Length: 166
Image 1 (cartoon, rainbow, N blue to C red):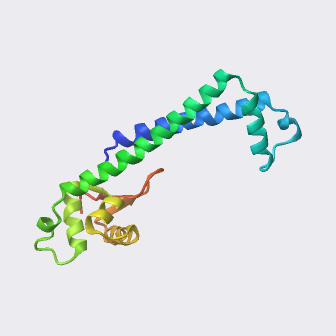
Image 2: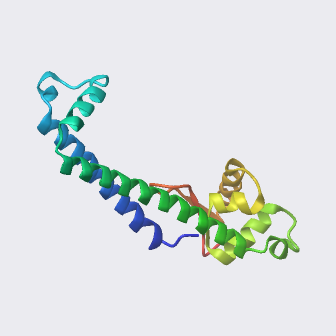
Image 3: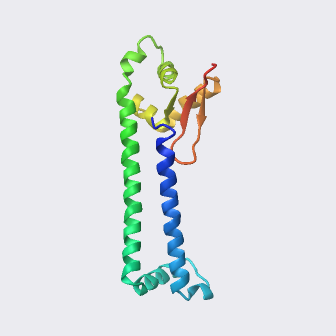
């Protein structure tokens, strides 16, 4: 599972870079297009953007291409990294060893949660080989029993955290 320090930095970096590039596009559209005076509609954005892009200098075009390529690679890196972290987390848990003596998979999940303190829904679904909806139902069951709490982060899948004094 990703620690709090790992994920938010990259997410914030991607959000900042995306905002810069979106602002950059609007600045280029505003600076190089007369369409803002007439009004910009959904169908005219494509024509305006292509006209503005063709009218840009070579340096501006290179800057835009490099920026969007950089943003694309950051997003791909985050996706690959997140999948790798989930796979590492799943491989660290010996399900047969933990489930010894447990009557149900929910009991096993609670034992794992007591050890790890928090798990993502994706990790639970991969660990028990179930879909995310069933994993979420299990987490809600633990939450209703006041054994855990389900957190819904701004980005990403929900995380279940153990209630320490349960």
